[in-house]
Every structure is written in C-alpha cells, then in structure tokens.
Length: 276
Image 1 (cartoon, rainbow, N blue to C red):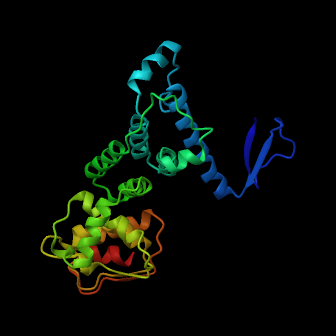
Image 2: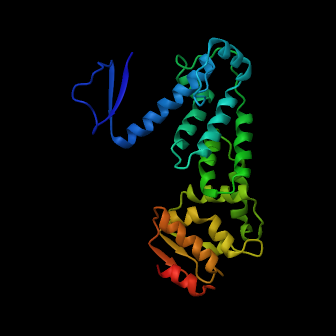
Image 3: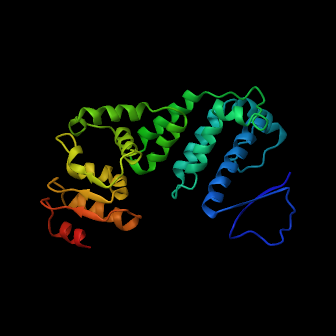
C-alpha cells in the first residue's frame, strides 16, 4: 500500500503516484508525523531485518546474518540513535529519538502488534538504554543539549534524576548544594517542565557558597531564555556572567521582556553589554 504525507501548502494537484492513502496535514503536524514514521521505519528495519538505518553502507545477506549476533538487542540501535542526536547541531533528530525509544515500550508495541512483530532473537533491555542515556548526561556539560535526554528518560519512565533535584528544591537547600553537571541539567529540565508559568525567574534562590553567581547564570541560561521576566538584582553577577547572558540572548530566540540587573558587580564592559 502506498502512503504519502503532504502538507496543506505543498500538496500536488495531480500526483504522479496514485497512493492508496493521502494524508493532508498542517506543516508543523506533518513534520512531527514524518519523524514518527521515520522512527517506525528505523525500529522495523532493525527488529525484522537487522538493518541499522544509521549505517549507510550497503549490506549483503552475509553481513545481515552476522548482524543477527551483533545486533541482538534494540539497545544497540537506541545507543546509536542517542549518539547521532547529540552530534546533530540543530537538534533535528531530537523528536525522532523520543519516538524511537517510545516504540520499544510494551504498551506501544501492543498497540502496533501487527507491524512490530519481532523475530524473537531481538531482545530489549530498557535499563541498559536508561543507563546509557544517564551516562551521556553525565558526560555532556551543556544543560541545553542534555534537555532532550531528560525527555527521553521521561519517555522511558525513569525520573530518578529529576526526583533528586525536586528533593533539593523542596528542602530549600539547593543554593548550598554543590551540584554535578548532570544535576544542573536535571534542574534545567525540572524548571522548564514545571507546571508554574515562567513569568518571573529569580536567580538568587540558586546562588550560594557552593554556587557562585556567574556559574549559576551560565548553567541556567536555557531557563532564563524561556522566562518573561528575570530578577538578577544584587546577585553578584560580574562582567563574565553578563557576557554569557548577552551572547545567549543575541544568538537564540528568547521570551525575555524584563531584566533587572541592578546592584551587581558590572564594570564598563559589562555595562556596555547590558545596554546593547
């Protein structure tokens, strides 16, 4: 059966191929749907024919037979997909990765049982995939690039890193706690996915002896960019923190409309960056 997805804008009046099913979607929805289909194709290719879609080399029947031993777990495909998504500079594989991980869950497999019938020798260890993603979070010092990995953990039903951070937030001790890079990434994810609207963000609640102002500011830049109002008053921000903030706000879309940086340690260069 032929299946073609068109956006409402680019659909042809007289398509060359006469498909059995034509799906007309709004551009944004069509993009998401195509990534879901791509994830489904990657999953089926691996579980049915042991083909890794990330391997562009042409595979012979002999190689496919060898791959039955090499790729005996879907976790191998997941790990390759995670690495490819992290290498992507524009994040175009992020949503694809989350769909791919979700397809391996038992609930989703039961919904698509006819399509997802496996060969029996292709196993899946969810914990192995979860631990691999956590390791990548620990290795990745960019909170912004790690956000999608937390969405992946959420897709797989693991919230252990987020629960740890929420415990610090509830206790009010987060400013005095020396956080690891993975914990900072978890904090960014928790704040961005909070049910509370990002109307005003106060950086001071995260600054303490273990967490100097400039470092906290740089680690929480993704949260600042999503906030409408940011309170940095008397936080101890220096020219270094101001430079990082100015660079981030210039190079990326931001919802920020109000920024209070009064009573900080800004020199002439920091003041210039703040004004521009």
